[in-house]
Length: 95
Image 1 (spheres, helix red, strand yellow):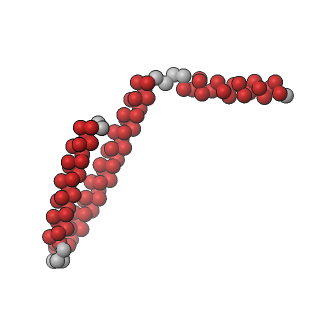
Image 2: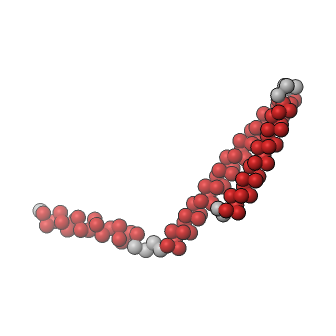
Image 3: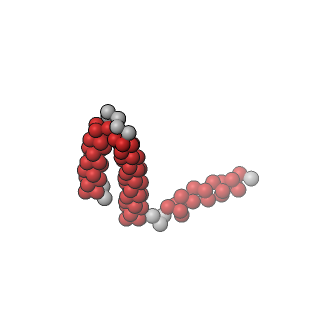
């Protein structure tokens, strides 16, 4: 019984070598780069959606004649500028 367990243990120890033995540095670098690009695009989309909702809120505030509507429009414009500058910087550095 002990011999069978040692054979199984040895086989289990060889599995990572068999599975991960074919991975090279360039494959790992390619997959990491792809994952980072996908993550950046997801974050860009989420921030764009938040800005679109903010624009709709600012337009609603302006249409209803609220006092803070002007500040909301200015804040939204500043948010868009920061978003655009951030995307340019991220695209230059990361991607």
